[in-house]
Image 1 (cartoon, rainbow, N blue to C red):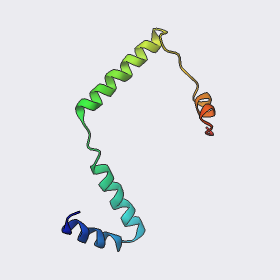
Image 2 (cartoon, rainbow, N blue to C red):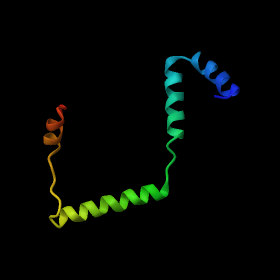
Image 3 (cartoon, rainbow, N blue to C red):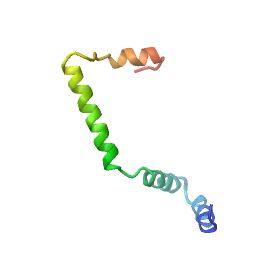
Length: 74
């Protein structure tokens, strides 16, 4: 970590908890910049899966059943 980043961290640590949380959220969000190519690939995949479902090639599983199998409450 650079010296300027360390100094910034020391300043941020002194902020109230709500401000630190907001800052952390914004910093994390900045690491997940949208990527048009990835978004387009996911859209194609979702559309292909939906088309396969409508053709009867894929079956839907109730969310309650999935969560029950995972041992998670719905």
